[in-house]
Image 1 (cartoon, rainbow, N blue to C red):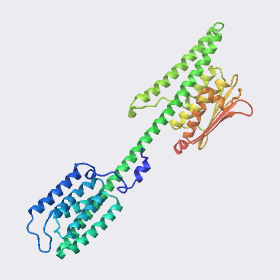
Image 2: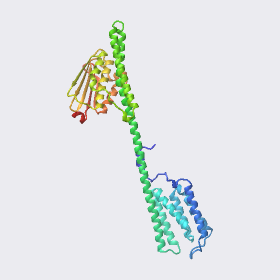
Image 3: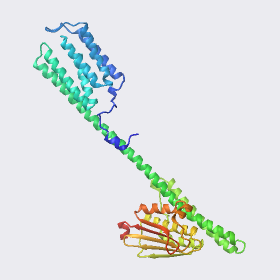
Length: 406
């Protein structure tokens, strides 16, 4: 499979074995050979008396005429080889003393045109030398050559060369355009694959952060309800209510993401997504699940881009979920600080202080998802045990100019 760079940088025409339809091994080249062979024979049969100074037509001339015509059959394999053969046979007619046939001259012109238009530049140089040498031999060896005939000969050859070069340039531009189109198509395909991969990763993060958090709350409340259902049924009912709330929230998140996947691009509406405005609700859910949480918002609050707002919320959510799972009997503190050029987030607990490896291994891709989210904004993330005990998550998300001025 060709790489995009190979497609773009491959030389046009030079060294390429791809040939136009005229030079493919099809009946076209055979047809040309038969036409010029038959034309040469008809010319020999119908032309008048041989001019003075020329040798009378004979079997040798018939053989040379047929050979010149048939040399065009090699056009599909090598236009230069066909041209050299035609020039050599034409010179043989002249050196043998025969009058040159128009079919032989026409065969040389066709082979020269094919070489210039369709073969490599090295072959074009060789063809120029072969035709020049052949023309010199013909003009010097013919018994009588007028200057008008010489000028006409060079004029025909020049027109043939110019026409071939023009077609060659045109073909080169077409091939380069095709290469560019292939490059752009390959680039679009690569971008599409990258976009699909990014979207899959984004959906994986969303499912993990939203549904994973809800399921952790459900598991904790279900366990608590089992312990108190006989002695304190009212507490069990509260736990079941929290389970219902968390389950409905998870279902809502799943339905929202499925709606995005099913709807056409222009109909996608992501107007119901969590942000920092829902932090108090999130902290209340975590408190109900058994982890006391203190929330502090510092600095001048201001509207944030939806993607940044969602990322900040998910970082807090994942950090609190990890504290719920690993901290044991502990207390968590959430601090959101609006700085001049960034949004700072700190989530600490004073629990057992597990290592990031343990948190990631038991929680799937929680910390990895946080790092991916922060990397999207070229931010910074620190997560690990604290010297004074417990576990801490620090994130700093740079703000764009519009967010800073909001």
